[in-house]
Image: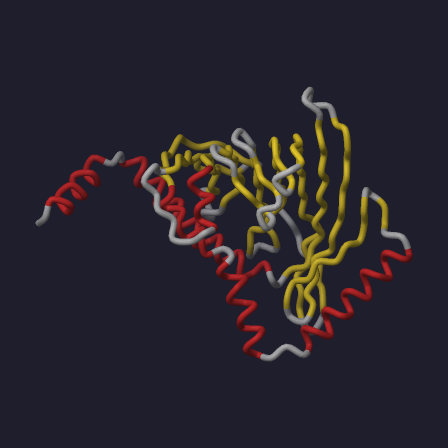
Length: 272
């Protein structure tokens, strides 16, 4: 056996049992997450986003919000704006959104099978970087906590200094540390908290979050078959388009999940 192989065996032997257990939990939860993602395309829902801009003292200086309906259009999810700043769209704006949706439907109905396959491939590749989580972090099992009355493992994640991302998106993993709560019964991520260590860019790199930014994520059980996003919150000092500096708080809630079926269009489901 060469030196590298010997060192690898020694390091594994010295690795704490709790860390190995934490890694196993994370790997199983990732399999559940990718299964959730495949089911999500079968659901319609509403996404409500509220953006707050704050001054240096933390006082709110500006508030904006949008509500979007996520529907199944031509076999794929489509986002339609239905309200702005807590009020339904004006008649003129609602008509524009309807016309925009009609154009998109016509476009999708004329897509070839190969074009549809390419879109599905791109959709899957956008999350491919998450497969690098086990390589990107050192995981430590901190203990257990009840979340909404159910027991969950609490796992700490610290970025590995020698992590070498294989994809562009995975570079972001080296810039955060966090904590994950994993449901013990179903190996699902109930919630997660992350702290930004180095600047990260989101939204086509137009929104840049500075070190110290906080990200909170929650999921909910839907229809006894899938866990889907319930709440995302971002608190950060940021730059918009690399120019405008601001202190911001973004709060996104997901609600009214309904399962889409071609024969009955939409059916209501329970959320737990």
